[in-house]
Amino acid sequence: MFLKKIVYGFYMIWLRIQGFKFEYLKKNKGEAASLEYLRKVAYNWSKFTMNIIGIDLEVKGLENIPDETCVFIGNHSSILDIPILLYVTERNLGFIAKKEMLKTPIIGYWLRNSKCVPIDRENTRTAMASINEAIRNIQEGNSMVIFPEGTRNKEGKVGEFKRGSLKLATKSKAPIIPVSIDRASRAFEDTRKFQSIKIKVIFGKPIETRNLTKEEEGTLASDIRNIIIDNLK
Image 1: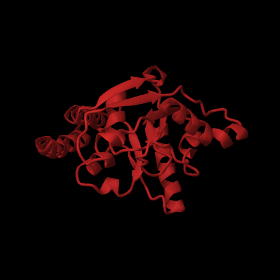
Image 2: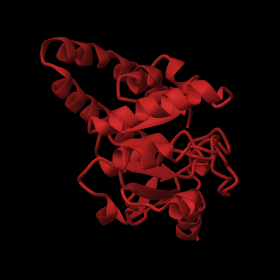
Image 3: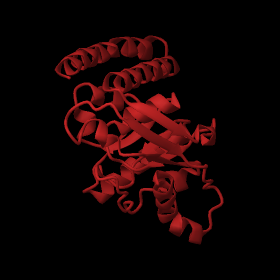
Image 4: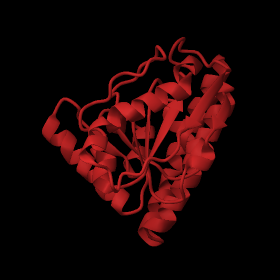
């Protein structure tokens, strides 16, 4: 176990070193080339993370993910939710993340460069500015991920969704993909040790947001939450 953590630490250093090539591509080849490189780096990191921990993913509903830009909305139990989604979808994803996370030395660097948006949930005004930035990302063709509970819930329960969190999808008119991840915290956070376990990931059917009535928009948060809970059963 200790050796695995040492190996993972060295890999994280290598992950940060790859940022130099990302910077070169962004400066000399353009954003498209740098983002494609970022996608490959993110996928390889997430795959390495799954393998070294020993996570066996059981994935259902991949056919529900459209080719177009969309908003993934899921429950949140672990920091591993991020590499799990990057690995399973094999696409660039921008995450709505706590501002503190984007300040971390290695993961923070890549989050800042992958259309992730920092959010301060204690400040309503700046939180809405973050949501508007994420909406612009979607309009520019970048899929986004949000965990509307606002914090990790390691007990396997799905907390209430924060007010206004779904504006990301309703204002951008992007389809919503509900995502259920079965307590990824069991793989590390619960014991602070790498645990080889099976984790289920279920993608629900897309929910179109273009022609929602006011009534449908009013119940959207609870409807999506119920889908996520049902898929976890």
